[in-house]
Length: 252
Image (cartoon, rainbow, N blue to C red; front, side, top):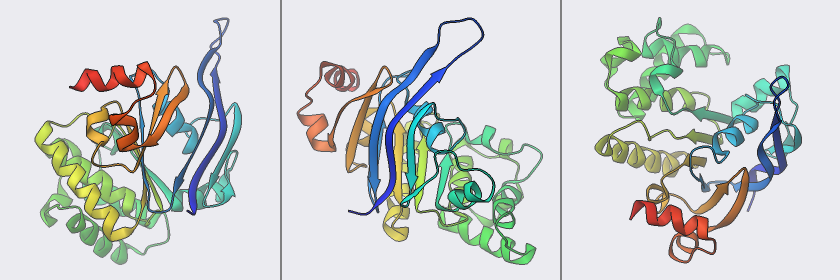
């Protein structure tokens, strides 16, 4: 299978003044194939979100390498990093916080398009198409993030992430702030978009039950390391590690 994303021996150490260094990510290696949905699960503090920030270059890697669509981006800057963002986008846990509160949802989506070369009229038309694709009424384009529901705002965040047609979508706890009904709607949307657009997903989550029917493979993180991996059925039905069993028991 063609690899869209590959992480090799990622390591991240946080150093704050005279305090003891904190090893947040310790020798993490994995890959996401073309059209594949891979879950990265674990408790809060296990290192999942730090891995996402390393991959998207929101944090600098201490050691290791990151490859996107076959090209190393570990220390990419400037135009090379901009080109990387054409291939991958991230959807965050809090959709309201991810938008500029001074801009409407439509402006937030259109800005992403304009930053990648769309003329104003073209950006407006594409914004309307993306909102429709993500199940949003056209009139919501004129609403501010705080004027819509959490589910609507997260749909807008997904529309914005899709604006440049990335090959990889990284979802960092993208449904955890939503109620169960809205969460199910967002998962259904993501499934439909993956089928229609053939994207790859890295789905970061602390809820192993949520990923059972959604992801092809599951990676389990604990204390900064991947301690177990396999297909969703293998990991959930026949866990090999006590930690994974504990995660499963916590949602039963």
